[in-house]
Image 1 (cartoon, rainbow, N blue to C red):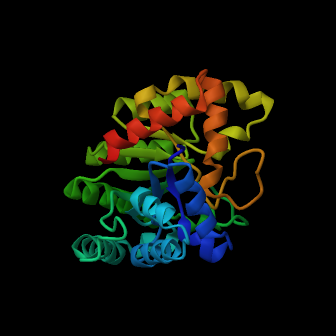
Image 2 (tube, helix red, strand yellow; image 1 turned 120 degrees about the vertical axis):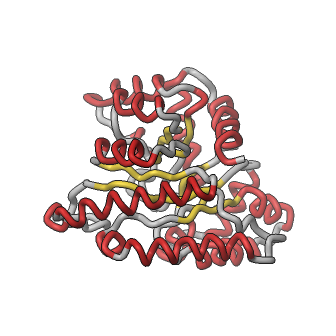
Image 3 (cartoon, one colour; image 1 turned 180 degrees about the vertical axis):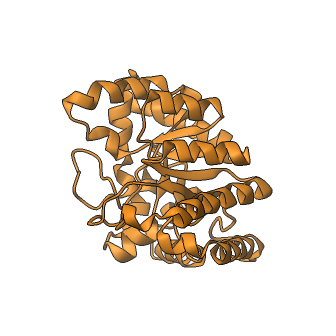
Length: 295
């Protein structure tokens, strides 16, 4: 029950102090079908996999540990921070090497080491200098702006070569995101943590993308709530996914705390009520979409 298609396990446990054993044990006890640990740096894959491996090794219940090994998967990609944008050629080479190393490694008995998606990657024009990303509009001169698009398109090209879906980060950058997708012509993957409206969703859906919703859909004030509900009803059942983006964006009633994949249940509960189905039915729908996209 309650798969999570987007979280950052290493950030959650190593940087935020979350008990990873408790998280994976709870997910396993619930018979979670799929959990996707997401990459953000060109060279973070091996460290992230080791973090999950060590956590599973520390689980006292062998049955739960076996389930955790079975549902945990990985992506690899580069989040578009300014440093990565300006070093994009070198960083894409490192990313490719890390993906190839994971795929060729012999130790596949205890964890799914071969990645199942490229990303997260994409376009971010949300200017919040005091926020965790520290993004300033003044950092995005013409060279940086074009470089961000090139970095995103390089991920799309790599994914096409590897025949893998892409985890797309798109925030305050719909037109640029769509333009890059059109330029490359590879439409296979997820628009994660979706934050646009119905018209933008239609544009992505028409190209074949899946739409993933996280805890942010539970935040909206009354003025925006109806629009969010219409959006959640609009996205077709066969293109619908749920996520947490943990350790970020904890859903109501946990907003403001460190998020974990366990909390994705609150996302399912909220969306199921809006769509007029049970959380269990929504979970089955999402798992079927995961099968179609990744396997």
